[in-house]
Length: 113
Image 1 (cartoon, rainbow, N blue to C red):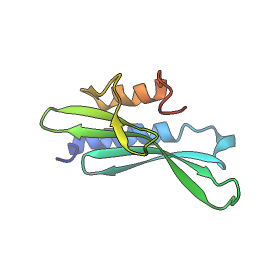
Image 2: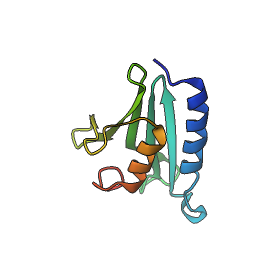
Image 3: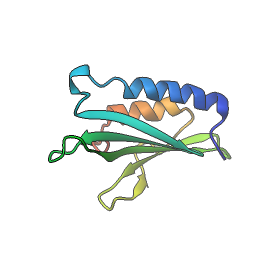
């Protein structure tokens, strides 16, 4: 089931503010973006290719999924097998913002290295 519309609008505002927080002097090299599909949100970093300055490539950071039947948000991280896995230290939360803050804090260094 899709993210409730009222919650989705707030999440989009929060994520846009989060993604726009890249320092001005770095925006020609790196940017943060997100995409929403149904009940899932993917946060990713885009960087300029080192060998082709006019091309950008995406690096997955985190995936969030809304579980409507439980009214919970789930957090996933990308492992070296290039598959999404539940983020074990905090796999669920009642509010999206709690999981976004966990990604920012990144105590295990899985999201930002």
